[in-house]
Length: 197
Length: 199
Length: 181
Image (cartoon, rainbow over all chains, first blue to last red):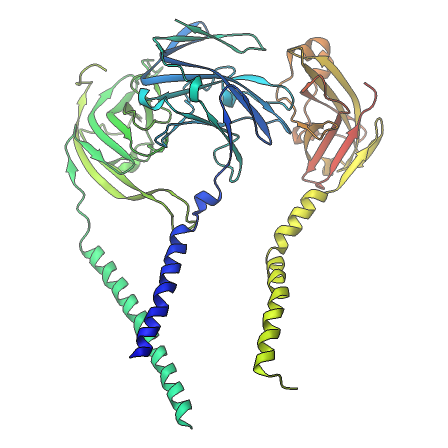
């Protein structure tokens, strides 16, 4: 009788330890998640392969672009968040294919694909080592998700253990929402001109 | 054989027996569950158009299906053509922007293989739909091009695919969305031209 | 000789100290070898103006020019590469990946389209094909294949050399040095 009780008593802690270990084992997604580099908007955030600086941020209800003489208007049921920034490659030529806006709730809003042909738009710019380029980012999200957001920039969302810059937008966040913003074609050094209407 | 040796043997025999019985019990339960699942298939609910359906990853509301000679972009095709148009609302319930809605709706009747996959347009833009953001429901338009010779359907039965989130999948233990059968069937008539309120 | 149970226990415990790391190394052996070979590779440095036989041709960096770029900080580098076919059948299976490397080890990928300035200044060079299997199709012995690659680099990039990585016939890297300019 005593023997059985002792067996159960030794077994219980073992089961408890195994359970805790099982629950705490990081999943594949966590093991291979990108390496986070923290930074703030308005300053140059250094990664190993690239650096990025978020500058002006504009909020708008609609975005107008011009292509081949015709004006296209992009509306949204929420708000457009336009980020003007600069990016530079450090070791090899690369393109930053992934950018996300992480709301405080943890919900991630990916870079809009509706401007994928615009010059200067982040995934269209090939970055050369040592030559900083102005880049434009556009996100679409409900108005309530803008406050306290974090800008996530990476080479690709798919590379395991790649680096990802987490840029705290903080005070850089504007509060006024423009009814419309126009993106016009600029020069080769500044590929777009942003006009508030 | 000493008494000690005999008792050792008995203990081993007992352990072997217990393990064997346990294994047989597990196999029997698993088999019984499989038989039970096969005998009582999940009833897929049939939902009327206009009713939102929770498919796990998306909330889908099918509105109407109609035939149109022009695609939603408004540009008339060179050769006369017929388009089967389906309007629906899509709400992304996951935590990230996603474009994984192309397999969500499939035509069950008439026979699904008869048509190539549809093109999805964003109703607001009248342009090819890209990824849909969470917390931002969008009206989408799915368009099947009916090549000449394809019989024009009078009604449609649509299957809405259910997807469930797994924190750890069975292969790598990575998080993701996985198909889990049908969430609902939607039956609706195909009308000539659009009937709904203007977009 | 029979050991006591106690001494066997200690010997086994001590052996674990050596065996455990060994097991890890054996397990990871393939990955380790791959990592070593990736770092080593066969690099051949070709001095400025010299040539080297590889993959069925004699390779030479014929010219490297610096042109003004689209901004004050940028320069366009034009690299004229020549391959004199030796064995066209081998050359036809060769493919190459070209990069520009500077003294700090920074690597620039070639541009997919020639810049307008290049086409205006050196129309003859700008017309040449880029280094790829396409350029070698139908090449003949003794008839040099002339290629061009263009890059955009910052004005402060120094000691540029052209790295030509061959895939297909013999996976080697030729590093062409360039001193004049």
